Image (cartoon, rainbow, N blue to C red; front, side, top):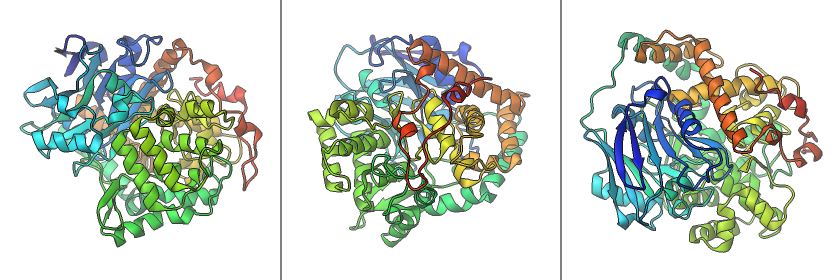
Amino acid sequence: MFYRINMADLSVKKDDGAPYQGLGGRALSSRIIDTEVSPTDHALGEGNKLVFVTGLLSGTGAPNAGRMSLGAKSPLTGGIKESNVGGAMGHKLGRLGIRGIIVEGLPKKDISYIIRVCSEGLFLEEMPELKGLDIYDTVAKLQEKFGAKIAIGCIGTAGERKMATACVGFTDMEGDPTRQAGRGGMGAVMGSKGIKAIIADDSGTKMVPFVDEPAFRAGAKKLANALLTHPVTSQALPAYGTDVLVNILSEAGGLPTRNFSSGRFEGANNIGGETLAATIHERGGKTGHGCSPGCIIRCSQIYKDKKGEVLTGGFEYESCWSFGAHLGVDNLDDIALMNRLCDDYGVDSIDTGVAIGVAMEAGYIKFGDSQAAIDLIHELGKATPIGRILGAGAEITGKVFGVRRVPTVKGQAIPAYDPRAVKGVGVTYATTTMGADHTAGYSVTANILGVGGKVDPLKPEGQVELSRNLQIATAFIDSTGLCLFVAFAILDIPEGLEGIVEMCNARYGWDKTIGDYLEMGKQVLREERAFNASAGIGGGADDLPDFFRKELLPPHNVAFDVPKAELDTVFNF
């Protein structure tokens, strides 16, 4: 079931989605944007569309299938964008039979609207009382009116003000907005449409139908067994969360420190997963927390402050890095507060942290000054001139301050792995359609963790092939509604991948092979690249900033040396 919402006349119409049958998640969102949005349209204009779509396995109860995708032309990169998010929303929309919600046009009135989805249908409703609220207060108001069991996705004041790094915050299993569709400015597009929130209530729904339920359950068991036996998904992530990577990357010399000037951080252990877990346990928080229904990896957590009050959740490695090593800060409580503020104002924690690091590079504030960094995030929340500069992203911040060393690709901030010491992910940063994005082809698996084989992270050989294969596979995984972290298990345990194929086939009565599904991934990348090319983002943009090729990164004293000619072959398929 598809719905179209036209904000110009406030109409809501059902749509059979005939051109989009057989697609889900990223494959669906990118196909809609590529088909219906002109690449030359302004990202905040009437021609852009915001889509909420579920994955092929959403609502089924498949292990770790709670993800959903938001899609639009990005106000940050100017290209196509799919932003992937966990929480309760994807599962509930899947149970409600929703494949896609397409929001188009611009509203005539400057008030807040919500999209309410329930078993009776989809409704567009005015809620002017939400105007000007940040995310936590918005969630509280919606839960007060509609009940605690609904799933919510909403924007804060950053989205209302159409900041290019604005995200959409989604509620987790406890009803807290700790899950973010963070990258690419989807919150700004949502704000331009006048949509403050989307809520879903799946009460009264029936079980999602299967063409072959026994075959589906057999496939689900294969994937679950792989996840429950692989050491990364069954041990490391539940115990320490993704923040377990801080010490691993610092030891490997690939933890970007003080705006990518070093690969090791002397305070890494103070902000790493082991210390994070110990702090959480000491204060009565929770590790091993699932962010969405059906999650059996449970890499999330609930972090409390020194007074025992919940401060933040879903405390990811990337946030611990962007407000930690990247800024030269080793105080977990200060980092957690910065993460909470970003979740509340509604901005991406990666781009915000990197932008602050660029401001530190310029000498606006000093590296290591966590209070000054916290103050800057509050300036963003108040939309002061410096706050708006930071809210526009790291690349704009670098231009305003005249900084040469600005770690972005296609306008989006480079995340928590230095591409000189983790060269496979450097290839992904340079070439992905999404702007710098580690999740688009997570080469850290083979470069650092020895998952799915081993490719020397310090040498250029083999990196293009590694990134290419992972980008193709990831585009498929992002289309299923599965969490990307299932890749850790299925790269080493073939039965897990077999289970995914069997679940998709059994859900819809298909007879597809893994080759067919990988072809879906290839087609996603072809369509996204075609959109970007028409938007003016051609192959010449597929590279890293020059300082990564010219400056040697301590401690290994390496540069990014994958030849540009090889980068140009990533999508030769």
